Image (cartoon, rainbow, N blue to C red; front, side, top):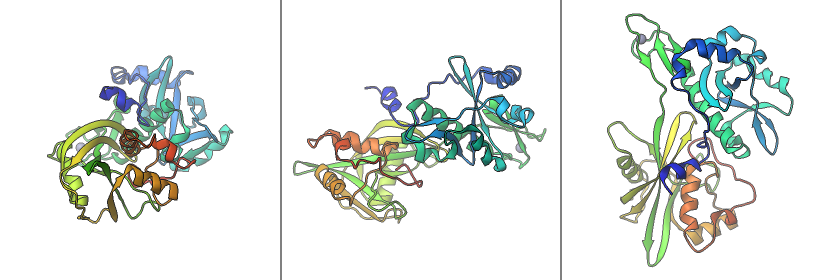
Length: 334
Ligand SMILES: [Zn+2]
């Protein structure tokens, strides 16, 4: 399987819209689309998405008629792209807008995408992740990082431009790169993977090692450094696995596997409160006893553990998981 295909199976990665990057340069076309009956607006309020349903969730998509202040919409709607004849926009609603959910029935309310993700279809989840990420960027970049003057949205919401004429700096949406790596080790015919936990995570939750890429380093160097900083383990043979948009708030997770070149764990930087080597049997037993939890299915961390576990002789990881999807935590990719 090539990496393009492998990544497409990750949550929030199944985006099927054409991003219409050339159309972003045509404000008249964008204005017309916002007013068109076929266009759909994805509302975002305090980084939450408007969802209806219970067991299975669907995004509530608005038309221009559902929003009170349509002229202002043209200044801050973000052109996401189109799927078939439908053009999608994302709009950040003002603080006082929570009540808008009551207009739509079906139990519609603003929900945290990280919690709701498993109950959404893959394409819907990807579209909402895109909307969440880009509206978050707009909210956090209302002022120019160079001169401090206000910025305004341009090119369909895909850049912000400084309003001070002598500056005019163009600011582009940013995505923070974070690596996540499952380190494995073989000893006396048994295979182990390295899992650790942060103190703020739910009881028993353990995950792969993760951290942000720093300026001036490659992704692979970030893998080696993070594992060393957090566990003192030296790694070799770093392999890219897949990537995942992770808009909580603005990351892309870059998944790796690596082989350990040492085995003694020492918690170096205080980020983890516990880390250990787990065989597949350890994981199966921990899950069965309820003393170990693995990251939720929506995370690439789960994917890394699952791909490794399923390669062994204890069957698929899914068969060992408790009936509920399990609860992760907002802190990182778990
Ligand atoms: Zn400026």
